[in-house]
Amino acid sequence: MGSVQRTLHRWHSPALDREMDALVFGHGGARLLVFPTSMGRFFDWEDRGMVGALEDHLAQGWLQMFCVDSVDAESWYAKSRSPAERARRHVEYDRYIQTEVIPWTARTNPNAFLIVAGASFGAYHAVNFSFRHPQLVGRVIGLSGFYDITRWTDGVANDDIYFNNPSHYLLNEPPNRLDALRRLDIIIAIGRDDPSRPNNEALSTTLWSKEIWHALRLWEGWAHDWPWWQQMIRLYVGGPQ
Image (cartoon, rainbow, N blue to C red):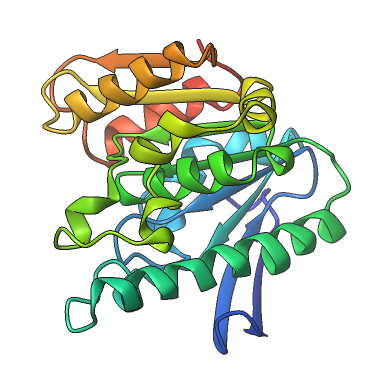
């Protein structure tokens, strides 16, 4: 990928009170913010061939990709912490993305169109962030995700958990939030044999019940690994094909 500009960034996050890393690929075009998979790192999309899958888009200046780090090991996957503490740390991560990462991408690239994407647990992050902040996002792409966070909360429920659980809060959105969600391009892809397929279909049913147009795409087989996600991101980054 010698023709694709690559830049590493690091800063101390006030929201998280720790150092955070990010990688940027490309020099212009629509901004593409991508989340790693569960407990993944900011370099996962590069190491797993996802950057390579979009090399032509990046080299031509059609896309600029921003790869962020996760704090999953401190939040939803932190089994040594209570569910309330896990959720609280995720809320801080959401604030980091909203108040630090998104403004940084806009300073780096003034293109107004933002695409947010992720695969597996990264799809949860992408969809949840986009649904929580639809005014910031143009398109969201969730690949092989699962969107009911109660799987990671040991049956505990509080506001921090509820308001980061798309499978629940979408059921009760007020009219102004629904209007914002209806302006969002939503693409959800899942394998027909993926155990998370029923959750994706349930989310789709909820979206249709709220008159939120979206694309649910079912792939043959399991389709839950990087080779499939490479194909998916190339297909969907331009729209719901």
